[in-house]
Length: 330
Image (cartoon, rainbow, N blue to C red; front, side, top):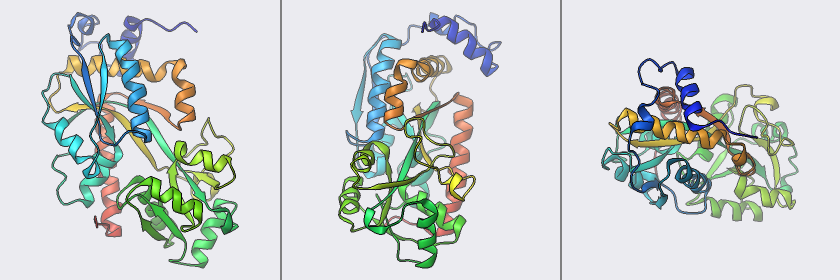
């Protein structure tokens, strides 16, 4: 399949976004950006799904932009270290970051001081993908479907153990959403990392957990865990055999970790737009589809204006749930 040229995509994208009259069609191409290597700060240690996506994005952006894009992992403090570094970086487009639900919509509500302002310290360049979770149970539970899982939770309130990687993480709030909507109470068990959860889930120390597809699928395929649902509203292209929570009795359930590209606040429009268009090309490239599918990433692109509004909406809606449930960092 022959892909359209960068100029063609830029013209079409600007037309779709309704801003062609505001920006000359050759404005981006006349810019000398980028003229040196770009650094992509990642808020998690190497090996997780965010790091996996960041490296895919960096490799492909290097090709599109004609300059190296290197990944700089700065894990720790629930991502605050990386975001503080990004917020204080020059507004020149040579230091970027991965926009993620945890740092932009969750952590600021349950941590007293994250050291950055999620809605004003960053430029939302482009939303790119969603990273759904899979709900897996240990085979010893005899639970084979999501409906059976919820029936057990209602029959034994506070006794169904649900492991998560810490208060305020996506895995934790995936269960919190169910508690709120279904009127059940899980015994949520916090861990310091997803690796510890998986070990205890495999040994039967905890009954269930929401986890990333790349981490859990090898054990599921080996029969050591049982996948009973995914957290998207529609089944995943890479794993169509796993039903959704939405189709299993809770319409509207859709809890995913969304990822995008961000920069420090005040990033010039010409630079932000150049990065937006290049990143959209990466996500739309059919050569990347298999890698995205196998790692559980669902392309869900949105332009800068839409991404900015989406972050504000997610910040508000999750803030309400966190406040209502009384969650605080321990």
